Length: 459
Ligand code: 4AD
Ligand code: MG
Image 1 (cartoon, rainbow, N blue to C red):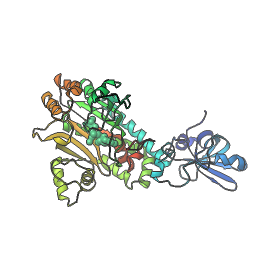
Image 2: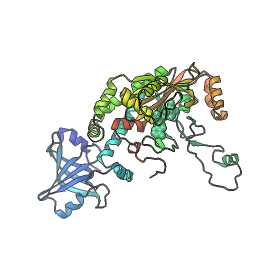
Image 3: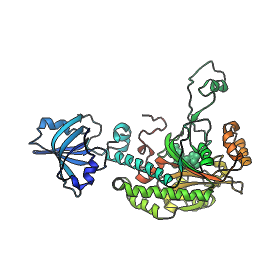
Image 4: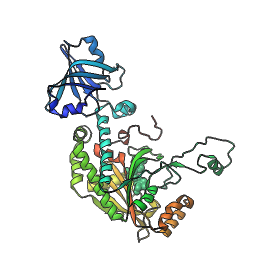
């Protein structure tokens, strides 16, 4: 269908005085005695383009459906300078209704609540807010690929269906084709009847397969959907979320912290450069000072603190925490938020967590009590990255899997990597939606993903 993207007409002054054909949806409209105005958006820019209908050309009957909120139209007209600085408008000469809309259109000319918009995920994309969110999400994904590509990483595709629980947290969604069957006598019999002849689930992380690839390709990353049957209903947890997981051979914990820092700064700088109108919109509407915050992240050092020292900071804070602070504590949101929002006021790596509260694959430190693991916490969100050096010693890993009561046969391949040419290696997982919350100022993860999947919620 012949037409020009609105953003081209807005961005390129050479269209002024020219005749163009454009397409889009009516975002708002205003009817007065001699002219009518419509704000048109075709998705190519956050900003709308004003179309002016002269009533000498368009009669009221023809105009009414063209001005309906949500209608899709195709307009031919002349581009002229707009009333606002650096804007243009289109004087319509002819117009065609591509898709009608009517009074029942759920997005009316007012500011809807985020809660209401969540009930119409298929239409909320047509608001300025979600238009901006998904433009940033696209650009952020591109920035991530660009960062790793530029630095010599290979993009690998880890499986979605797996037979092992990487995090060992028991949050795996089952994959099965076998329904309820009274005649099945045992779990074993049930599993044997199932599609794979053994238990299978949706991956919680591509890490274990990522390690396989890193042991041959050196530097790799995965970037795809991961799944967790999180029972908690929080603004930061989704059952389906996207994770970026680099895995790097010949890298220790300090190396990987350096890489994570560099990547975060690089992708934020990219968004500051490429998504200015969206960030200005979020800064004005959702998080005052957002742009300044992001610029500060690019320009300043991240903090780093040992887990044990972080506990001292929490103890000295004088705060009453719901979960009491003592060594061995798995930091809760309240602790993470105090450390990053109030104490450091910037991103902070908490390093060397107790071995007992972390996953089986993490490298054991010489003290026997802690592992070479770190979480990156950021103000307003909390944890956005989970990171560690991996245990590369066969015996230690074998014993850890056994002592945690995990099934050794599920991890035989993984153990092989420690048998043949084992090397120090490290990696991390960045939650894309958590990162989205940080760069957009959205306070609920449900507003960073197209169709959020959370407990009791599947639209
Ligand atoms: O800290 P996690 O559990 O780490 C891993 O899965 C490692 N295997 C990663 C690796 O080393 N390759 O999760 C990593 C990140 C978290 O920091 C968080 O940003 C995000 O994934 N995340 C979630 N995001 C949304 N909803 C959830 N339920 C999430 N669980 C984790
Ligand atoms: Mg984690």
